[in-house]
Length: 618
Image 1 (tube, rainbow, N blue to C red):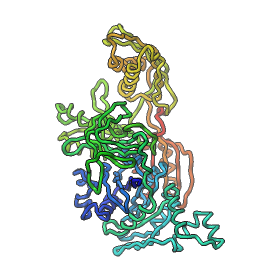
Image 2: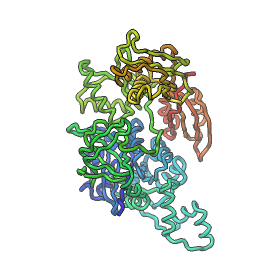
Image 3: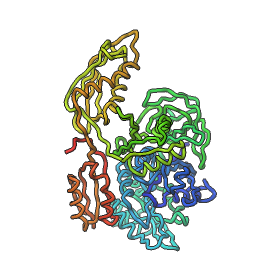
Image 4: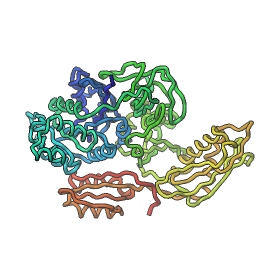
């Protein structure tokens, strides 16, 4: 018998009621005896003290429950865009998503951003319009806005009565309101209908299920989670429209993806992972793909009915937890790697800030704490500025600074200070050059010699490394050490990270008695820096692709603002009462534009940016 396991995400804009929906789901499925409340600080998924204090989700959390003979691993994700990397990492392990929309606030900017990402990844989505009990809510108006601003490929699955005495009623497949929506989207079924060919309810249902799973249609449901209205119907929809992850593939090689790292109250490291093929077994050796290192599965857990349970094996499609495997970090593969949904689309933080301890004597403690936090969130890149020794972090926004400050104080008892945020910059060589440090050269303390050649590449090329040194002369462990040293140097030898550069390992000196890989690893950054000093470098700044929507009546004001930022408009169109623009813009002048757009459109605009490349400032 096949395991029936569904990995389900729940996502939303901040304050759409996502955590309350989660609590209601867990209550209905018997995982909890009573519904927790955000304002009471007793929810299952927002379990961090900081989350309870702030009343918002900061870290993704996973809980399991049973529904109609199917195991569901529910992953609750943050709603604020400063935690975008956390959200996108979780998306890679999901089979379907509930996207919660507040009936009162409607479709928000972050809702649009999340939905665009879900569409890019072709994940099945159920839209759940929450808070229909609030005064002034009009379900028909919410549906109109969904069609205008999210997608016109939505199906209204229920009749909803809003207000204090709110309630919902699901349409049957024998009702005209549902059947008509389906017929308008299927030429085949419409032809049969016009020819008076009887269409069975099972055919309607099967056609709709196929389209939802292919992410070409999106069902819309209504409810008020705090009043426990519509949640039972939402669960029925999950069971009906979403399919489990796949078949059990016991014979295949193990492939598991680590989507979350955290430390428990006893400071044990926990790695949350999804098994995509094969299985993880207790006391067996597995391989970390990133490092090529083997480790033993010493402490393995799975999720069952809201709790962690010790496990001997975690099968395909299930979520497992590995304890105290030091070599694992978020984004690692175990066993063998595989293509994932959204590969190459994980957001990159474009802001940098200097952090320092209030007590200079606690610098080493701060560095240790930040290293732990980087395992949890690799986008929190840390570097030490050469010359000044300043500790630099890369972040998404101001809220992330506040949260980081709170975590360092609460968990690590460290008081820290931050400088002003600035935009991340990168560098590339101004011209081709080569440099070497030979064994025996004055000032070279290593039994090693390396020659590197560098040249600038077009924008968006990144770092490209190759070796022209024979593996017969320099063996693989030493070659790997040179590459690792070059990669380390590219990140740290300049004031800014190196990009858009080809680096070629062209020659070497080798001492078969005294030489070690460590010597080559340490020497490579010095050689790279020498080549970069010789060539000179150019400063690059992030250039973004943008998508903007705004009420058409604001068109002139919006275009003037884009002109002041020297934005390049590639496409423009009208959709209903809105104008849609896309193009490119430098990040620095546009980074605070979202707030300005919200002001000029009275909250009815949307502005999404995504990194295109790093280019020289005009």
